[in-house]
Image: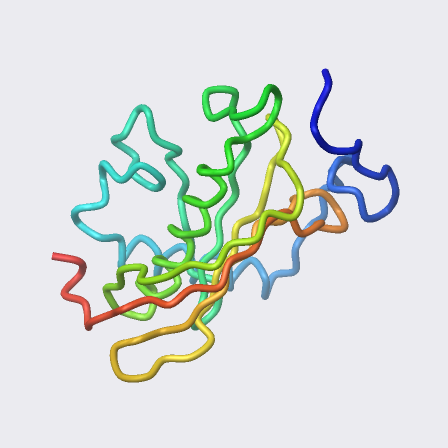
Length: 179
C-alpha cells in the first residue's frame, strides 16, 4: 500500500509494537474501581445515543470513559475498519471526536456540563486500523464559566507514542446530571 507519508520508524519509540501485559498493584486496582464507580454514578441520562460514548448507538464508537483522578478522563479504543479514512488508517475525524469526547468527560466528572468552544488539534501520526489507543483528557484551569483542558491519544503499546493532541476551551455550567 502506497501512502503519502514515510513508514514509521521501528524502534523503542514506535507506536506499532507488541503489547506487554502487566499486573497492577492493589492500590492501583482500588483506584480504578473508584474511578469506575464515579463514572457510572455520573453518567449522563441522555448520553445513550451519543456517537462516541453511547452504548445504544450501533453505528457509533461505543467508548466507555472513566474518571482519571480528580480532573480527568480516560478510555481505550481499538481502531475499527468501519471508521477507516485512508486505506488501513483511522479517519482523522474519529480521532478528533475521541479527543473532544474525552475533554467533555473530563469536565463532566467534576460535576459540570460543558460544550466545546474551541479546539486546537495536532495530528502527530496516523493510527492504523487495529491499533489500540489510550485517550486521556484533563482540565488545566477553570475560571468563571470557562475551562481550559488538554487531550491526548497515545498508543497503548509500551512506550505510548503520542499520536494526536488537543488543547481546548470549554464553556461549562453546574450539572444536574446532564438533564
